[in-house]
Length: 104
Image (cartoon, rainbow, N blue to C red; front, side, top):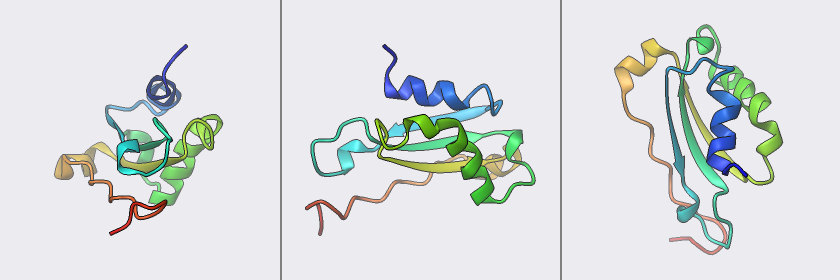
């Protein structure tokens, strides 16, 4: 059986012809018993050229839709073209969870 990480990457890397990626499990930052359910995913692909951020996210969610809800509860996407990534080189840091009793 493949892990959630492997399933997520298999769903997006080839179809989007990703040239760089980073997957981070952010579950430890969230309260409750859920493990391997909160992720941040950085993708760099020419496929994002000419697409607004919301369209990029829709494209990715179309590919990972079967994983959303169960096993993945939350997926923060950071989608860049290679040209955009060349000036960034860092994935934004996920904010701390403020819900479920993990506030303040």
